[in-house]
Image (cartoon, rainbow, N blue to C red; front, side):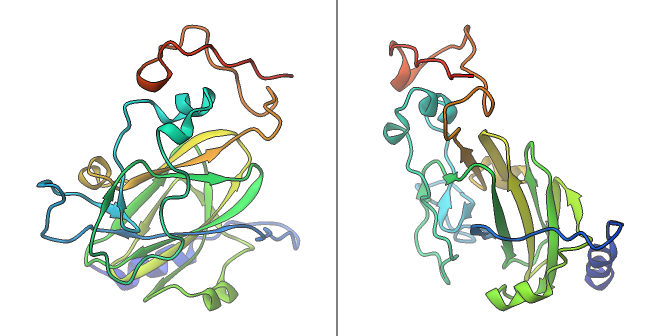
Length: 231
């Protein structure tokens, strides 16, 4: 595996931007550590993969449906992973992972790879810009080296062994968005999360209403239909 050429290729791909226009960074910071959960061990008798000590599991009620009906607190907890990856993960929690973000905010996501294999991460439905990639451990001082001028827009990013990658995302579209490992065994066994963007004014300008023919189940089955969004 030629990591040197891989790093060089990632750093040398730049976007041509005329003039002196610069992409701003002024937003929340969300470190995401794609780390294998307890290598060689099992959780409740099954192999699991985790993000910052939490392994994603599907709920009986679809997550977005729970938000529409206003019963999210009965199905999942927002922001249930640590902002900083723990130095060691002694116990892995099994639950849905949903990060509650602010509509139209600008978010920094740090993918830190502590393993010997390349990791690949995908942001479903959103494009991001990758602004930095280096060997070692990320720290806030690394922001001085971000490429904020000619960063390339992507949907999927690779993270080399014992390295990190930083991407910036403009959260301008309300709904739930999935971030997941592109290694399907890791994705299926827990390495994914959702970013929730709620319409601040419950407006059709931000998000569509619930479809008329939507099927309900579990917690929301039989509940009165929520009022439609305004214009």
